[in-house]
Image (cartoon, rainbow, N blue to C red; front, side, top):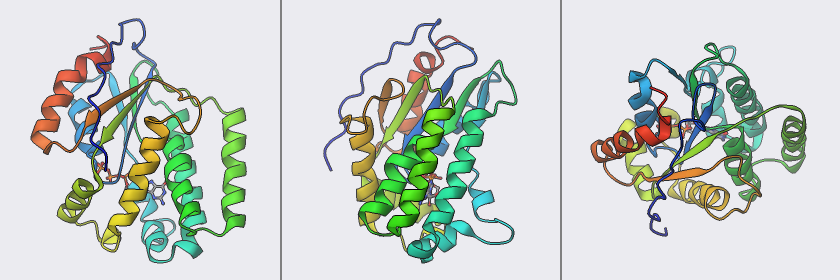
Length: 231
Ligand code: DGT
């Protein structure tokens, strides 16, 4: 994988990132999104919306995440439907209207990274993919998916594999390196190479290959820019 370009320091003025704004945190599986989000728990004006992975693991008693990994051709469409709904809820909902909202992933990574990977790898029947695409087209046209900043935690697929092994989420045990390599490329295509059209917001790239304590230091040093004086 290509080296991480040095991140442009995003200078966000107070007026640009005040309350009521939305930041999405993107990056491969195991890139460190949880570490990033956990850092911001210390700020009371920041509302953190993590991916509801536990909900995906218990859909009326079914582990949809596990089903998707075990038999993607059969279950990936159902799983993407679930994820799309979760993301839509996160984009729409705010329990606290005067906070800065930080989302783990977004409807964009569902569409441009995960759905695209399933299509490229032929892990989703093309009729299922087309139906899902119709959903996303409709959402694009009719829903207000507002984003003010994208934080891209860019880690090499090798780093992600190591972190995945370490945390040992049972559903992910069979995930091959190639899957992470494909997701890495799709994140880069979307966030660095502009292959998915105009980005919804500026991108701040952080080198997430650094070990987690070092990454945490970087997050701390960028936190003021990220929050734009909110706190
Ligand atoms: P982190 O903190 O950077 O290590 O993040 P994770 O790995 O806790 O969170 P994430 O979003 O990378 O993934 C959670 C699991 O859900 C992982 O097995 C990938 C899967 N996943 C998340 N979103 C989608 C999606 O839209 N489609 C598919 N097929 N899988 C997804």
